[in-house]
Image 1: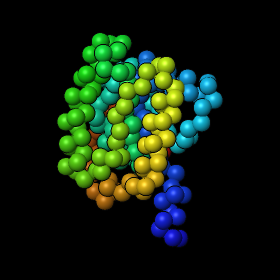
Image 2: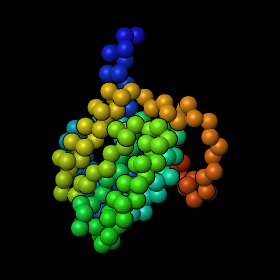
Image 3: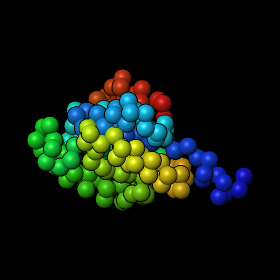
Length: 166
């Protein structure tokens, strides 16, 4: 198969960790408004982006995700007051770790989408999908042979179901 053609045929596996109050509602608005966006995004809903453990992102990549999206309320609009500020600080440091272990940072996107921004949700997931198609499939974690030391808390039925569909 011709290499240029191959990257266009890739249907990337993307996991989206989203806030219930804003981004999930925005994605729901996009769906109920019949806006068209890629169907390859697996959405995991959290009460707040501040509750998303960076290990969940590592696990998504390890389980075969080609890209990861973390999205929540706009700064200052968090239902829990400061959750998105905590998330923003935590993930700034986490990006350095991903870069250190060799993950292309273009595979990870952080965005703020409100409940009223269904169109923005469509733009974010479409842009991420196209960017991942150009990058090709994720191979970094397949090349690393590491032992798993994950806590049982990471193996909730919801996470198992989401990771199983990757």
